[in-house]
Image: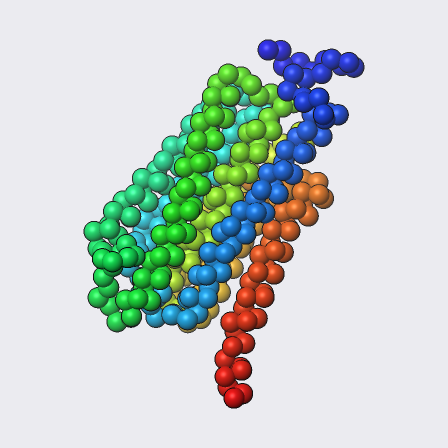
Length: 223
Length: 98
């Protein structure tokens, strides 16, 4: 398929008939994604609110529960996600300057880093399972705090990180599709909205983790 | 497209800042600042998120409409937190008065 923008009557093959121009189409795509992300803020926001209230009620239990989390693995995963945000931003840049090789390379990098994050998360979940920290019938806690309250911390831990991990899995699926499209040479400096918009989603998931990491892992040290 | 091409140099600069802030927030967590630990951790998180939104997500170079929609998410969040905490934080006041 030709990538050239024909002047006058003919138009770019990626331009949908209900838009005047590629610029308008791209603006609508970006805006649509931001509307979706605003709903996602509320989706996670409810959990952050629950966290804030229960932490206010049970500070000792949250402190103890958090102390048991592996700060090294948490920090490693934070770094992995920030790296993946860089490769994602670079993939969009590669699309903007029309580098197919750049898009493919950076998208593969993003997917791999997402996989590393989920792998570390699986190791952490396995440790929690071994230590009887899965909320429910077999939950055990041998610290000072009331086990029922620590269980609430771990319920929030699994719900928030679980929902985040689900978003990561979805994001990796989206990146595989974008990778396939990039491989097929579907993007050009005139048309790269799918890369841009998927990037917005990926960065958003990174931002959620930027807040989850200190709230879940770091509060157990002090404060 | 909205068109603005951010130079890779700026992306690497933002990346370096994000990594440095991550190291900082982990370091500060081991220093006992009492209640300020959470305040410092959240402040660093907000700075990191802002950098990601402005540069990686290109909001700095986006139209006013995108700005408004992006900000609206924060506004709804603030309303949810504001009203909920107006309830929970004030419950003790009522008990104290009785």
